[in-house]
Image (cartoon, rainbow, N blue to C red; front, side, top):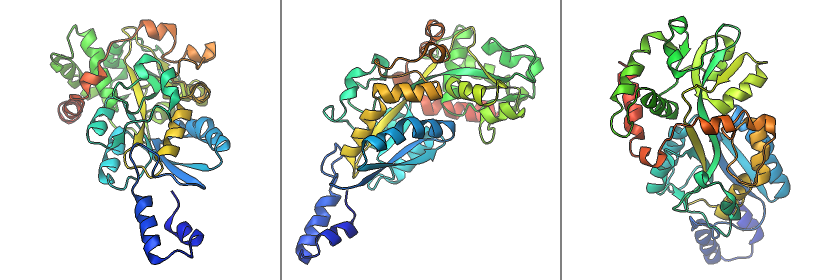
Amino acid sequence: MPSLRSVLTASAALTATALFATACSSNAASPAGGSGDGGGKQTITFMGFYGTFQDAFTKTVIDPFEKANPDITVKYVPIQNSAEVLAKLRASKSRPVADVALIDRSVAPTANQEKLFAKLDTAKVPNLDRLVESARNKDGYGPGFSIDSLSILYNSKKVKQAPTSWNDLWDPAYKGKLAMPIADTRGVALIIALEKILGADYKTDIDPAIKKLKSLSGGVETWQPSPDVYTAVQSGEADVAVGWNARGQYYKDSSGGVVQPVLPKEGTVTQINTINLVNNSAHAAAAQKFIDYAIGAKAQKAFDEAAFYAPVNQDASLSAAVKARTTASETQAKNQIPADWDWLTTRYTTWVDRIKQEVIGG
């Protein structure tokens, strides 16, 4: 959308009445796209995860998108987690601070219900038809962008016998050397994994998993490693930790093998990050063009090859070496612990609160 200054420059001959009408019409952006987008150079703001995710996303998605669309610039705003996205969008609902935002699938429905996100125009986002089933949103909101899974991480220089099971987190050898940042989606996924191990049903009662986690608290060195759990494992601040596979694989390479991610023998829980059009975006058409590019086969392959996520586009084919290290691998496909994230949406906050109060603060 042109700024008021550019409108004034281009329309110096207009009367005060015409200027007022132009300003009013340009501010009346449609949440579904179109009316908020004018000609000329545009800047859309993308809110995405910090660190290695930002580095890979900028190189493999933003840079080639801008090259292919010289009239659009993408500004990356790094965020820590989905809770931060939700808070920032709630605080700027009428004049949003972003046009496109990433958020966990478990949190996205809350944002959709609060009308923080808008439904996509399928004509503007044709790649929606090429997505794998798990990445589709039946209500028309933002689809999945990346697929990941929970894993155990360990420092190969300090741990002589690699962990192979979720139960190994309770191994006395790791007492006081654990990093457990589980006051978020990682904790929710871990509860689901523990419920399976304990023979319980997470949809009925999570007390068994909470009790199990409480018994671990004395062995935890940190619940909130800084700057993140992957750096903590690499530096030796922690010997063993819980984290996401994709970042674990990235740090495995960047650390020269010091950081090692493990797929526990009981299986793992898959998690999806969604990419969303922010409601009331002043650049909705450009934002949807960017979303379409991000979920396209070319961008998906490039990003996932660099960052070790599984692709959401069925036409994106990863190299065999990379695929074997992602949730797209045959090994991980056979070792998935089912998680009903749509059902979990209404329990997510309660579960995280219980982790904070009964496990971390207990």
